Amino acid sequence: MLTKIVRTVANQLILFIVIFGLYVIVHGHITPGGGFQGGAVIVSGVVMLLVAFSSKELKKSLRERVLSIMESSGAVIFIGLAFAGIGTVFFYNLLVGTPIFGRVPAIGPGPGDIWTGGVIPLMNFAVGLKVIAGLSAVVLALALFSGGEEVEE
Amino acid sequence: MKRQVTGLIVLIVLVAFLVWGVMLIHPFGYPDASDMDDYIIENAQEETGSNNVVAAVLFDYRALDTLGEATILFTAVMGVLLLLRASKRKKETS
Image 1: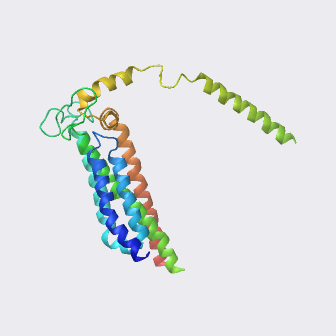
Image 2 (image 1 turned 60 degrees about the vertical axis):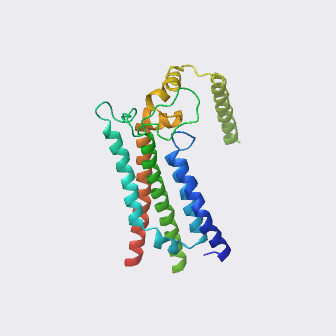
Image 3 (image 1 turned 180 degrees about the horizontal axis):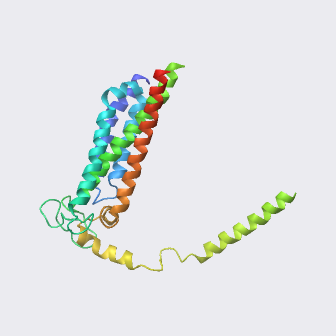
């Protein structure tokens, strides 16, 4: 655990990091970015918390069970969206033209609209959930593993 | 001495192959066959409704590849958690 200054700054900064990561995930079909990138941004915030606080402190709020449920539900949403279009082909974008995320933008460069993209925003969300939970679990497990050895020695 | 000469010959042959390969590359930005690229660039916005064509390729045209990517991530996370948990348990019992 680091000094109180570092802990306070990390506590304030994690909010902005999470908001920026969620922005990158949600706007994945309009601006550069997407599920993988936004998830990695949020996990970098988790790593910052891990540096500022000890891994045992962080384990109280980030449970391994919750993380594994989050990752599995992300995978299930992704596969479910893939199977939803199986009437045509696997991974068919069936939401284009419907009221949900179904607007079609004008051809060519444009500012973009959040309600476009069909299943792409939902898949971005699923992949983002997967990446956040998976990488957080890996980082936390590695930190707990090495931290436990230090205590024993 | 003999090993050095052999190494020098192998190095020259490898460098020659590398230079040959670099000289055979087509000019940057002008692919040989651009039918697929042109189709995706022209039709991606209309077909998927996504302004970000990279996202359209990742999650619509080549979504099966993204499924494999997600599976790799899942397997890596599962392996790390399984390995570390098993080592922790062994330490507790011994």
